[in-house]
Image (tube, rainbow, N blue to C red; front, side):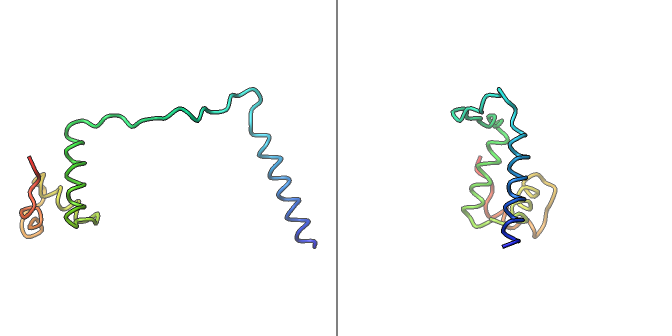
Length: 91
């Protein structure tokens, strides 16, 4: 019983403290406002399409995706780029 009373008292204190955080006269945020992400530039859009294609091909790990882009950008060569060579990006 004592634990319940202490828990209820703590909850009341927390609720009182939180209710004091709201400013009087501040309008509630409008729920009809939708923020949209900025449009992607052509290179970002191409990379997004490549990323989606990689997921379709089963390249769904971070390391696979990073390796693919590193091979595509010329930062990586050799055997690690075999998947890239088998699935070159669409032009």
